Image: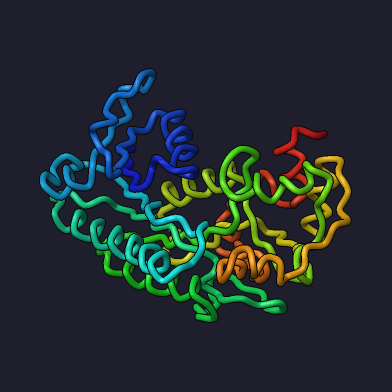
Length: 303
């Protein structure tokens, strides 16, 4: 299979690229740098880099691809100033528009487009339970971004479009989790805010496996929740981190401290939603790490 990945140089993109190459697929990474990074030392011949400018100017560079995976977008891990909000939204709308234009320009259309999205689509809720049949609910900035993001993705005229709604991706070295684990490393971990907010998460290995599942399974399309089947409330998840690291869970962080430090972005930590991966599981996908205990023990290499 020939797969083009927009945003393939990021945290998830690198892990996905490694998995695709391991099964002898060909990968073309589309990035701003493009062929300036062509053929880095040690890269296999089945890995290529192209810039957005290259692709716009010469779409035939991607002729014959079987799939496009879009992981592009400005990081949300920054203070949400007016300028930052604009960049977060526009980066996602621009990437979707570029992929739609690329799809139109290709003679032989890729059969599937996977567009990353977020479980924030369902809005923030302490009591709700959401699967792929649940409606989008705009309750804050990020859920509004996801609504516009998916609307832009719908303009991609793909035979099969998958909108992958991603939860917190768990990895020991990259992503947001190392910052979450840092207080426990320093013996200062505890519940955050009320501790009742839901955390929907997924291990890095499982999200990569889920993307491969979506590539290979012709019957899966539309919204797909990329989150493990057993989300936890913040307090319980923190206790699981403490247990996996052999550290106490005792030092609570009041909500006002995070609001003062992070501003509006604190909503990512102080609120959440309980998202369940019903569609993929009904189609036969199984999680290597379905529980927080199994996930965290794997991350910290504990039996």
